[in-house]
Image 1 (tube, rainbow, N blue to C red):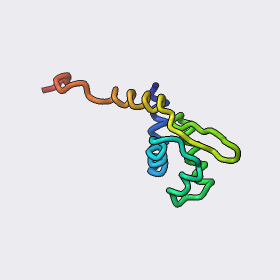
Image 2 (image 1 turned 90 degrees about the vertical axis):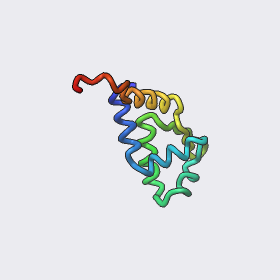
Image 3 (image 1 turned 120 degrees about the horizontal axis):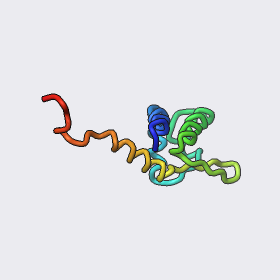
Image 4 (image 1 turned 45 degrees about the vertical axis):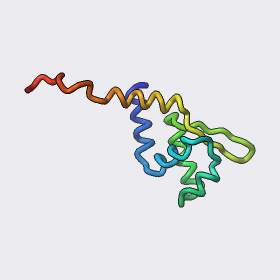
Length: 98
């Protein structure tokens, strides 16, 4: 994953509702109607959040009849996690100043 893709995911997760949506989806696919039950938001607002999560690749959408079902893209989330791990300091003795 490159820094631009990681930044898009960070931006998507910077909203607490979207962060909670991803958390809800972490235990399996959910219909949009189930997500709406959890939040005090309108359907258009949920659609806006889901569009952002889908555009950055964290969430996949699947239509079944008139219902939209969402799930976390586990591979994309794994790639993001690995990228974030590269930001961790690699040791305490590597500095130039003492």
